[in-house]
Image (tube, rainbow, N blue to C red):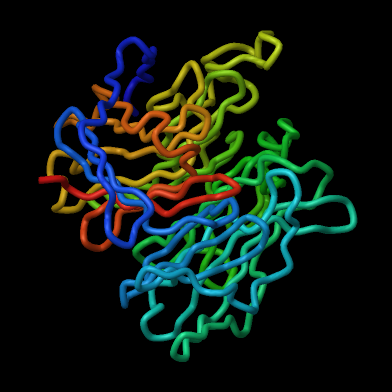
Length: 382
Protein backbone atom coordinates (compact mmCIF):
# COMPACT_ATOMS: atom_id res chain seq x y z
CA UNK A 1 0.00 0.00 0.00
CA UNK A 2 1.22 3.50 -0.72
CA UNK A 3 2.36 5.58 2.22
CA UNK A 4 -0.27 8.06 3.42
CA UNK A 5 0.15 11.44 1.77
CA UNK A 6 -0.92 14.54 3.71
CA UNK A 7 -1.73 17.83 2.06
CA UNK A 8 -2.66 21.27 3.33
CA UNK A 9 -4.83 23.89 1.66
CA UNK A 10 -1.91 26.10 0.62
CA UNK A 11 -0.55 23.41 -1.69
CA UNK A 12 -3.70 23.16 -3.75
CA UNK A 13 -4.78 24.93 -6.89
CA UNK A 14 -8.01 26.92 -6.92
CA UNK A 15 -10.28 27.31 -9.92
CA UNK A 16 -10.95 30.44 -11.95
CA UNK A 17 -14.24 31.17 -13.65
CA UNK A 18 -13.44 32.66 -17.05
CA UNK A 19 -16.79 32.79 -18.84
CA UNK A 20 -20.40 32.93 -17.70
CA UNK A 21 -23.19 32.64 -20.22
CA UNK A 22 -26.81 31.46 -20.31
CA UNK A 23 -27.50 28.08 -21.91
CA UNK A 24 -30.60 26.98 -23.74
CA UNK A 25 -32.89 24.78 -21.65
CA UNK A 26 -30.60 25.04 -18.63
CA UNK A 27 -30.66 27.25 -15.57
CA UNK A 28 -26.97 28.03 -15.86
CA UNK A 29 -23.89 27.25 -17.95
CA UNK A 30 -20.38 28.33 -17.03
CA UNK A 31 -16.86 27.57 -18.13
CA UNK A 32 -14.16 26.89 -15.53
CA UNK A 33 -10.42 26.84 -16.07
CA UNK A 34 -8.84 23.90 -14.28
CA UNK A 35 -5.15 23.03 -14.22
CA UNK A 36 -5.32 20.81 -17.30
CA UNK A 37 -8.49 21.61 -19.23
CA UNK A 38 -11.36 24.08 -19.52
CA UNK A 39 -14.64 22.59 -18.31
CA UNK A 40 -18.20 23.58 -19.14
CA UNK A 41 -20.68 23.13 -16.28
CA UNK A 42 -24.38 22.97 -17.14
CA UNK A 43 -27.20 22.70 -14.64
CA UNK A 44 -29.47 20.12 -16.25
CA UNK A 45 -32.16 20.12 -13.57
CA UNK A 46 -32.85 21.52 -10.14
CA UNK A 47 -35.66 21.40 -7.60
CA UNK A 48 -34.57 18.01 -6.20
CA UNK A 49 -34.64 17.67 -2.40
CA UNK A 50 -31.27 16.44 -1.17
CA UNK A 51 -30.51 14.17 -4.14
CA UNK A 52 -28.11 11.42 -3.07
CA UNK A 53 -27.28 8.91 -5.80
CA UNK A 54 -27.71 8.32 -9.52
CA UNK A 55 -27.36 5.56 -12.08
CA UNK A 56 -27.26 5.81 -15.89
CA UNK A 57 -29.79 3.68 -17.76
CA UNK A 58 -28.95 2.11 -21.15
CA UNK A 59 -31.23 4.51 -23.06
CA UNK A 60 -29.52 7.62 -21.66
CA UNK A 61 -32.00 8.32 -18.86
CA UNK A 62 -30.73 8.60 -15.29
CA UNK A 63 -32.18 7.27 -12.04
CA UNK A 64 -31.86 9.76 -9.17
CA UNK A 65 -32.63 9.25 -5.49
CA UNK A 66 -33.83 11.94 -3.10
CA UNK A 67 -33.12 11.47 0.59
CA UNK A 68 -36.76 11.97 1.73
CA UNK A 69 -37.55 8.67 -0.01
CA UNK A 70 -38.22 9.41 -3.67
CA UNK A 71 -36.75 7.76 -6.77
CA UNK A 72 -37.08 9.65 -10.05
CA UNK A 73 -35.95 9.40 -13.68
CA UNK A 74 -34.23 12.27 -15.44
CA UNK A 75 -34.84 11.93 -19.18
CA UNK A 76 -34.84 14.36 -22.10
CA UNK A 77 -34.35 17.33 -19.82
CA UNK A 78 -37.22 16.50 -17.46
CA UNK A 79 -37.55 14.97 -14.00
CA UNK A 80 -40.26 12.34 -13.62
CA UNK A 81 -42.83 12.03 -10.87
CA UNK A 82 -41.74 9.80 -7.96
CA UNK A 83 -41.58 6.13 -8.94
CA UNK A 84 -43.87 3.92 -6.82
CA UNK A 85 -42.56 0.77 -5.17
CA UNK A 86 -39.64 2.23 -3.18
CA UNK A 87 -39.28 0.53 0.24
CA UNK A 88 -40.32 2.44 3.35
CA UNK A 89 -37.49 4.82 4.24
CA UNK A 90 -36.49 6.29 7.60
CA UNK A 91 -35.95 9.90 6.51
CA UNK A 92 -34.63 11.57 9.64
CA UNK A 93 -31.28 13.21 10.38
CA UNK A 94 -28.79 11.85 7.86
CA UNK A 95 -31.08 8.92 7.08
CA UNK A 96 -33.25 8.44 4.03
CA UNK A 97 -33.08 6.97 0.55
CA UNK A 98 -29.40 6.82 -0.33
CA UNK A 99 -27.73 5.10 -3.29
CA UNK A 100 -29.01 3.38 -6.43
CA UNK A 101 -27.21 0.94 -8.73
CA UNK A 102 -28.07 -1.24 -11.72
CA UNK A 103 -27.59 -4.99 -11.66
CA UNK A 104 -25.08 -6.45 -14.09
CA UNK A 105 -27.94 -7.96 -16.08
CA UNK A 106 -30.17 -4.89 -15.90
CA UNK A 107 -30.73 -4.79 -19.65
CA UNK A 108 -32.24 -8.29 -19.48
CA UNK A 109 -34.08 -8.27 -16.14
CA UNK A 110 -34.44 -4.61 -15.10
CA UNK A 111 -33.04 -5.25 -11.61
CA UNK A 112 -31.85 -2.31 -9.54
CA UNK A 113 -30.54 -1.97 -5.98
CA UNK A 114 -31.29 0.73 -3.42
CA UNK A 115 -29.62 1.48 -0.09
CA UNK A 116 -31.55 3.36 2.56
CA UNK A 117 -32.06 3.98 6.27
CA UNK A 118 -34.53 1.49 7.71
CA UNK A 119 -36.42 1.93 10.97
CA UNK A 120 -36.85 -0.80 13.56
CA UNK A 121 -37.97 -1.27 17.14
CA UNK A 122 -34.64 -0.12 18.60
CA UNK A 123 -33.66 2.58 16.10
CA UNK A 124 -32.52 2.67 12.48
CA UNK A 125 -29.84 1.10 10.33
CA UNK A 126 -28.66 0.73 6.74
CA UNK A 127 -30.52 -1.68 4.46
CA UNK A 128 -30.28 -2.80 0.83
CA UNK A 129 -33.23 -3.71 -1.39
CA UNK A 130 -33.52 -5.11 -4.89
CA UNK A 131 -36.42 -4.44 -7.24
CA UNK A 132 -37.43 -4.62 -10.88
CA UNK A 133 -37.75 -1.31 -12.72
CA UNK A 134 -40.66 -1.41 -15.16
CA UNK A 135 -41.05 1.44 -17.67
CA UNK A 136 -44.08 1.86 -19.89
CA UNK A 137 -43.91 5.03 -21.96
CA UNK A 138 -43.54 8.00 -19.60
CA UNK A 139 -44.49 5.94 -16.55
CA UNK A 140 -42.31 3.76 -14.34
CA UNK A 141 -42.71 1.62 -11.23
CA UNK A 142 -40.79 -0.82 -9.07
CA UNK A 143 -42.01 -4.39 -8.76
CA UNK A 144 -40.97 -7.29 -6.51
CA UNK A 145 -39.16 -5.00 -4.10
CA UNK A 146 -37.31 -7.12 -1.55
CA UNK A 147 -34.86 -6.26 1.24
CA UNK A 148 -31.76 -8.43 0.84
CA UNK A 149 -29.69 -7.15 3.79
CA UNK A 150 -30.14 -5.02 6.91
CA UNK A 151 -27.71 -3.89 9.60
CA UNK A 152 -28.66 -3.89 13.27
CA UNK A 153 -31.05 -1.04 13.99
CA UNK A 154 -29.91 1.10 16.90
CA UNK A 155 -30.55 4.61 18.16
CA UNK A 156 -29.04 7.53 16.28
CA UNK A 157 -29.84 9.47 13.12
CA UNK A 158 -26.45 9.73 11.47
CA UNK A 159 -23.63 8.01 9.63
CA UNK A 160 -25.46 5.38 7.60
CA UNK A 161 -22.99 5.32 4.67
CA UNK A 162 -23.91 4.22 1.99
CA UNK A 163 -22.79 3.39 -1.53
CA UNK A 164 -23.49 0.36 -3.68
CA UNK A 165 -20.86 -0.77 -6.19
CA UNK A 166 -21.57 -3.62 -8.59
CA UNK A 167 -18.46 -5.68 -9.30
CA UNK A 168 -17.74 -7.29 -12.67
CA UNK A 169 -19.09 -10.64 -11.48
CA UNK A 170 -22.38 -9.00 -10.47
CA UNK A 171 -21.77 -9.12 -6.71
CA UNK A 172 -22.31 -6.00 -4.60
CA UNK A 173 -20.01 -4.01 -2.38
CA UNK A 174 -22.13 -2.01 0.08
CA UNK A 175 -20.62 0.56 2.43
CA UNK A 176 -21.97 1.45 5.87
CA UNK A 177 -21.24 3.99 8.58
CA UNK A 178 -20.77 3.38 12.28
CA UNK A 179 -24.13 4.99 13.10
CA UNK A 180 -22.37 7.54 15.30
CA UNK A 181 -21.46 4.69 17.68
CA UNK A 182 -17.77 4.31 16.97
CA UNK A 183 -17.15 1.05 18.83
CA UNK A 184 -19.40 -0.75 16.34
CA UNK A 185 -16.73 -0.25 13.66
CA UNK A 186 -14.45 -2.69 15.54
CA UNK A 187 -17.11 -5.36 16.16
CA UNK A 188 -16.72 -7.94 13.40
CA UNK A 189 -20.16 -9.32 14.24
CA UNK A 190 -21.78 -5.95 13.51
CA UNK A 191 -22.19 -4.74 9.91
CA UNK A 192 -21.84 -1.06 10.86
CA UNK A 193 -18.62 0.75 9.94
CA UNK A 194 -17.83 -1.73 7.21
CA UNK A 195 -17.62 -2.67 3.59
CA UNK A 196 -20.04 -5.53 2.94
CA UNK A 197 -19.86 -7.99 0.04
CA UNK A 198 -23.01 -9.85 -1.01
CA UNK A 199 -24.48 -11.54 -4.04
CA UNK A 200 -27.42 -9.93 -5.85
CA UNK A 201 -29.85 -12.10 -3.88
CA UNK A 202 -28.18 -11.33 -0.53
CA UNK A 203 -26.29 -14.61 -0.28
CA UNK A 204 -22.60 -14.82 0.60
CA UNK A 205 -19.83 -14.80 -2.05
CA UNK A 206 -17.33 -17.63 -1.67
CA UNK A 207 -14.33 -15.26 -1.50
CA UNK A 208 -15.53 -13.35 1.59
CA UNK A 209 -13.10 -13.49 4.51
CA UNK A 210 -15.60 -14.97 7.04
CA UNK A 211 -18.00 -17.07 4.94
CA UNK A 212 -18.77 -19.49 7.79
CA UNK A 213 -19.53 -16.68 10.24
CA UNK A 214 -17.16 -17.96 12.94
CA UNK A 215 -14.78 -14.98 13.09
CA UNK A 216 -17.11 -12.31 11.76
CA UNK A 217 -20.34 -11.73 9.91
CA UNK A 218 -20.22 -13.62 6.61
CA UNK A 219 -21.23 -10.44 4.72
CA UNK A 220 -18.22 -8.44 5.96
CA UNK A 221 -15.43 -7.58 3.54
CA UNK A 222 -13.51 -5.04 5.66
CA UNK A 223 -14.00 -3.19 8.97
CA UNK A 224 -12.78 -0.17 10.89
CA UNK A 225 -14.50 2.45 8.75
CA UNK A 226 -16.22 5.55 10.15
CA UNK A 227 -18.66 6.58 7.42
CA UNK A 228 -18.05 5.62 3.78
CA UNK A 229 -20.05 7.77 1.36
CA UNK A 230 -18.00 7.24 -1.80
CA UNK A 231 -16.99 4.00 -3.52
CA UNK A 232 -15.95 2.88 -6.99
CA UNK A 233 -14.21 0.03 -8.82
CA UNK A 234 -11.06 1.01 -10.70
CA UNK A 235 -11.84 -0.08 -14.28
CA UNK A 236 -8.16 -0.74 -14.97
CA UNK A 237 -7.28 -2.87 -11.94
CA UNK A 238 -10.74 -4.05 -10.74
CA UNK A 239 -9.82 -2.87 -7.25
CA UNK A 240 -12.38 -1.34 -4.90
CA UNK A 241 -11.70 2.17 -3.60
CA UNK A 242 -13.61 4.11 -0.95
CA UNK A 243 -13.63 7.54 0.65
CA UNK A 244 -14.89 8.07 4.16
CA UNK A 245 -15.59 10.88 6.58
CA UNK A 246 -13.18 11.34 9.43
CA UNK A 247 -14.08 13.29 12.56
CA UNK A 248 -12.34 16.67 12.83
CA UNK A 249 -9.82 15.97 10.07
CA UNK A 250 -8.75 12.52 8.96
CA UNK A 251 -11.00 11.92 5.95
CA UNK A 252 -9.59 8.88 4.16
CA UNK A 253 -9.14 7.27 0.76
CA UNK A 254 -8.71 3.50 1.05
CA UNK A 255 -8.74 0.42 -1.16
CA UNK A 256 -10.42 -2.06 1.19
CA UNK A 257 -9.13 -5.61 1.06
CA UNK A 258 -10.76 -8.76 2.36
CA UNK A 259 -10.59 -9.21 6.13
CA UNK A 260 -8.53 -6.11 6.83
CA UNK A 261 -9.13 -3.54 9.57
CA UNK A 262 -8.85 0.14 8.64
CA UNK A 263 -8.52 1.36 12.18
CA UNK A 264 -11.47 3.52 13.20
CA UNK A 265 -11.67 4.47 16.07
CA UNK A 266 -8.42 2.93 17.32
CA UNK A 267 -6.28 4.98 14.93
CA UNK A 268 -7.13 8.14 12.99
CA UNK A 269 -5.50 11.20 11.47
CA UNK A 270 -8.32 13.31 12.91
CA UNK A 271 -9.24 14.42 16.41
CA UNK A 272 -12.46 14.61 18.35
CA UNK A 273 -14.47 17.74 17.70
CA UNK A 274 -13.24 19.18 21.00
CA UNK A 275 -9.65 18.68 19.83
CA UNK A 276 -8.83 15.70 22.03
CA UNK A 277 -6.95 12.67 20.77
CA UNK A 278 -8.74 9.71 19.20
CA UNK A 279 -7.68 6.20 20.14
CA UNK A 280 -3.96 5.51 20.35
CA UNK A 281 -2.69 7.72 17.52
CA UNK A 282 -2.20 7.41 13.79
CA UNK A 283 -0.49 3.99 13.57
CA UNK A 284 -0.79 0.65 15.33
CA UNK A 285 0.02 -2.98 14.43
CA UNK A 286 -2.87 -4.80 12.79
CA UNK A 287 -4.51 -1.68 11.35
CA UNK A 288 -4.20 -0.46 7.76
CA UNK A 289 -3.01 3.01 6.80
CA UNK A 290 -5.08 5.16 4.42
CA UNK A 291 -3.67 5.62 0.95
CA UNK A 292 -4.45 9.33 1.28
CA UNK A 293 -6.07 11.55 3.88
CA UNK A 294 -7.33 15.10 4.28
CA UNK A 295 -6.63 17.35 7.24
CA UNK A 296 -8.57 19.58 7.61
CA UNK A 297 -11.60 17.57 6.57
CA UNK A 298 -13.26 18.24 3.21
CA UNK A 299 -16.24 15.95 4.09
CA UNK A 300 -15.84 13.62 1.06
CA UNK A 301 -18.87 12.15 -0.64
CA UNK A 302 -19.21 10.60 -4.11
CA UNK A 303 -16.23 9.00 -5.85
CA UNK A 304 -15.51 8.36 -9.52
CA UNK A 305 -12.33 6.95 -11.07
CA UNK A 306 -12.12 8.57 -14.46
CA UNK A 307 -11.65 6.34 -17.50
CA UNK A 308 -13.40 8.24 -20.30
CA UNK A 309 -12.21 9.88 -23.50
CA UNK A 310 -13.67 13.37 -22.96
CA UNK A 311 -10.99 14.28 -20.41
CA UNK A 312 -7.93 12.17 -21.28
CA UNK A 313 -5.91 14.45 -18.97
CA UNK A 314 -7.85 13.02 -16.01
CA UNK A 315 -7.71 9.36 -16.99
CA UNK A 316 -6.94 7.22 -13.96
CA UNK A 317 -7.53 10.07 -11.53
CA UNK A 318 -9.89 10.01 -8.55
CA UNK A 319 -12.70 12.59 -8.61
CA UNK A 320 -14.02 13.11 -5.09
CA UNK A 321 -17.01 15.27 -4.19
CA UNK A 322 -16.85 17.35 -1.02
CA UNK A 323 -19.73 18.54 1.11
CA UNK A 324 -18.04 20.89 3.58
CA UNK A 325 -15.71 22.61 1.09
CA UNK A 326 -18.22 22.41 -1.79
CA UNK A 327 -15.76 21.23 -4.45
CA UNK A 328 -14.48 18.32 -6.50
CA UNK A 329 -11.01 17.10 -5.58
CA UNK A 330 -8.99 15.51 -8.37
CA UNK A 331 -6.31 13.13 -7.08
CA UNK A 332 -3.66 12.37 -9.67
CA UNK A 333 -1.65 9.14 -9.64
CA UNK A 334 1.76 8.65 -11.23
CA UNK A 335 2.71 5.65 -13.33
CA UNK A 336 3.35 3.55 -10.23
CA UNK A 337 -0.09 4.34 -8.82
CA UNK A 338 1.03 6.71 -6.08
CA UNK A 339 -1.06 9.83 -5.48
CA UNK A 340 1.25 12.75 -6.13
CA UNK A 341 -1.03 15.74 -6.57
CA UNK A 342 -4.43 17.13 -5.59
CA UNK A 343 -6.36 19.78 -7.50
CA UNK A 344 -9.46 21.34 -5.95
CA UNK A 345 -11.97 22.32 -8.62
CA UNK A 346 -15.23 24.33 -8.62
CA UNK A 347 -14.82 25.44 -5.02
CA UNK A 348 -18.03 27.08 -3.72
CA UNK A 349 -19.44 27.17 -7.26
CA UNK A 350 -22.41 24.82 -6.86
CA UNK A 351 -22.91 23.97 -3.19
CA UNK A 352 -22.42 20.69 -1.37
CA UNK A 353 -21.35 17.98 -3.82
CA UNK A 354 -23.04 14.72 -2.87
CA UNK A 355 -22.34 12.43 -5.83
CA UNK A 356 -19.83 12.25 -8.69
CA UNK A 357 -20.38 9.89 -11.63
CA UNK A 358 -18.81 9.36 -15.04
CA UNK A 359 -21.47 9.20 -17.76
CA UNK A 360 -21.22 6.80 -20.71
CA UNK A 361 -20.12 9.66 -23.01
CA UNK A 362 -17.21 10.54 -20.71
CA UNK A 363 -18.80 13.62 -19.18
CA UNK A 364 -18.89 13.91 -15.38
CA UNK A 365 -22.19 14.42 -13.56
CA UNK A 366 -22.62 15.86 -10.08
CA UNK A 367 -25.46 16.00 -7.57
CA UNK A 368 -25.71 18.83 -5.04
CA UNK A 369 -27.00 18.01 -1.57
CA UNK A 370 -29.32 20.96 -1.06
CA UNK A 371 -33.01 21.61 -0.42
CA UNK A 372 -32.98 22.81 -4.03
CA UNK A 373 -30.58 20.17 -5.27
CA UNK A 374 -29.30 20.07 -8.84
CA UNK A 375 -27.95 17.73 -11.50
CA UNK A 376 -24.84 19.23 -13.09
CA UNK A 377 -23.01 17.98 -16.19
CA UNK A 378 -19.31 18.70 -16.70
CA UNK A 379 -18.08 18.51 -20.29
CA UNK A 380 -15.04 19.65 -22.22
CA UNK A 381 -15.12 23.32 -23.18
CA UNK A 382 -13.74 24.40 -26.53
